[in-house]
Structures are given as C-alpha cells and as structure tokens.
Length: 424
View 1: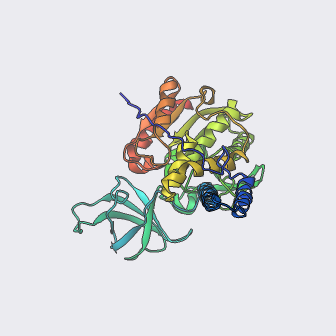
View 2: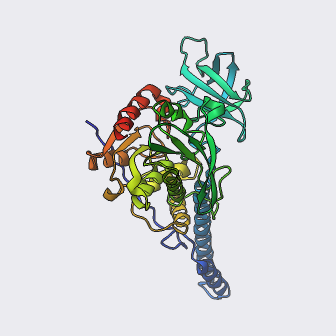
C-alpha cells in the first residue's frame, strides 16, 4: 500500500518595502529618503534620536529592497535553465582513472546510483560517455567508486576531468546513435519552425516524445529503440528554447505552460501526416506539456494515451527546489518563488491546474519515484489515487529526476510494453 508523505509549506512575511507579490514598492525608498532628510534638519533634544530612527528606517527599507532584488534574480535564474546544461541538483564529479572498460569517479550519492547513465563534461557539445553498474570488486579507495564504462560517444575523458550524470545515454540523432532510419522534419509552430525527428513504423498510432528540464531531444532516444521494435512511429520534436528551435519571447522557460503549444503543433503535424491516434510521452516538464495538450488541444480527441515520466505537477515546489539547488539563501526562497511566479504569469494564459480532474481523460502511465529532488512524488501519488481507473503508477526507487529508465531499464520497458500494446 502506498503512503503519501505529507508536505507543508511555510509562508515568509513579505519583506519591508515590498508589495504582496514580493516586488519592491517604487515609492518606498524615496519616501524613506524624504523622511530622513526632514529628520536630519530637526534641532532640539530629540534630534539625535530622530536621526538614528531615520537611519534605521532607511537601512531596513534598503535591506528589504535588496532582498527583493536578490529574490527576483534567483527566480529569474530558475526560469533560464538551458536544455543542454545539467540540472543544478547534479554534483560535479572528478574522474580519477579511466581504462578501456572501467571509470573511477569521486564517491558521491550520484556516482553510486544503480543503473545506466550518461556522463558529460565541459560545455555543450563536450565529452560524453555511458557508464553502467558499480563494480564493487574493482580496487578503489574509500572516496572513489568504479563503474563499468559502456562506451565513449563523444570526445574523451581523462583523469582530472569534471563530469556530471545525465539521463541522456545517446548523442547525435536516431541514425547515428541507434542505426534507425529517420527523417528530419520541420513542424510549423506559432513562433517558427520546430525541428523534429520522425521515425516511421507500421502502426497507425504514433508516439510523440517530449523531453524536459536539463535535457534535449536526445533524451527520448533512450526508449526509441524499444518503440521502434514494437513498430510505433515516433515523432520527437524540439520546442521553444531548445537548440535549433525559436527562442521564447522573454528568453525564459515556463515549466510547460507556454511550451505545450509546441507539443500541440506536433500533434497537429502527426494528424496531418496520417496518424489515426497519438500517444503523448513526456519527461519532466515535457510530461506537463503533454497534460496541458491533452486538456486544451482542439485535437485532444486523437490522443489515445499519456506516458508521464516525473511530471512537474507542483510548479511551486519545483521552483523552490531549483532555487535551493542554486544555493539561494533559505530566507530568500519565498521571494525567488514569487518572482519566478510573476515572470511566468506575465507570459502565460491563466490555465487550470495540470492535475485537475478533467485534465486526464485517457489511459495514463505515470512513472515516478520518491527520490526525485525536482518534481515531488506526492502529487503523482495523489493523481493516481484520484483516478485509479485511468492512471497506472509505476514506481521507481533510487531514480533522480527524469531518470527512471536509467535506474531500471528492464522493469521500465516492461511496464511500458504492458501499457502501450493494449492501446493500439
């Protein structure tokens, strides 16, 4: 029996000199300066006390304005996560040794995770390799761990290199990475063409795969071989803010609440190209986009099912986790969240919550686990409990955000097979 962990949130009082939304009142600092100037001109027995009071008021207002500014900066940084950069929750690990089939890394909770992961180094386009299980029998020191080195896909790794783990285990495109023929297509989007890969297959039900935070469209290639083996046509689009895709008008991400329109454009493309039905398959914010598309698209009657891997269902908790991972001081976290909310709300339509009862009307496979530090597991539990006849929950323990396949490829693909085949 599943037991959902209760979570509580604590509201922090709004900083002095800030409005209810966490923004500084433009007139607050000016009023303080005027009052201070008047008090400095006062003479008589109370003059010294008055001047001290004015100085204290000015200092408090200045500190409040600085806190608001810092919160806004942190909130803005949260919404500017690049898809080709690691999530801030991923630690940098040092490579200590490399052989033909083994790699020695700094021992950390990340480096001892079970499963298969990509490791990346350097700027976008830098070195990339794939590591397998931990080899506890290999000689190593107490502060290192040895893993199997499955392959090096790009560049090279040398002792001293700083790397991080990623759920992306492939680089390039379906042909170069997997030997699967595909077509490069452009999907007409509201901001411009959206580059996509299309992998043809025999079934009339297509699968549209949508990556999420901290990854690119290379991430869904982890399951593309499985989908191709089961004869599902696969469309893997980019969306606004991705490399090669149009830039978001404000240069920020919105946790799926504007990006879903690009998934809707991909759905329209699939239908025009002959797809009779479509399964939307998303990770992280890509799963949130799938939910919004299923609830709001004019073509939602063509959606046969949803696969939601680590969906972001509580945006406030996700914003708080991302801000904390960027080392935002704890007292500033509420300001950072409110600032990010203000940035987000200025660019999106007011939409119903993604987990509203009417948001899920088709069979849904929900893949998630309690070790996700970015998207809390509890909202997924509540969604599965609320809609037991529609939502099947596959729990994967020990998996970081969006990496359930990596933690247990065989179990993941079996759950996927049992869900997908009956839908076609």
